[in-house]
Length: 109
Image (cartoon, rainbow, N blue to C red; front, side, top):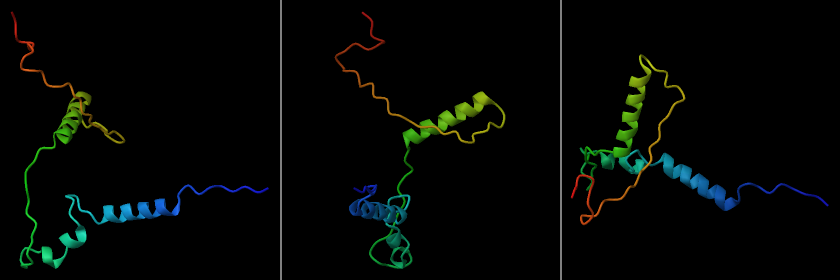
């Protein structure tokens, strides 16, 4: 009787991983398809029927909270803090919105 180790990835899983890697590499930071965004058709000096325009600024409130936490840490630690290996994450805290019919903290009888 012989035994063998089952492969960790089957053919379909490998193909999906390769496809995801390719799509990730060819997608720009704004979600644009890089082969299209870097083509001569995308050059605003060439009329091709489309172009890219900026939209914003927009506030990423999660990123703003993360950057504020980093700044607070730097102030608390003091001069020239070593941030090597440190990172901050954000989490969404959902406390629900109060109902208009329910008394709030400032309502007194």
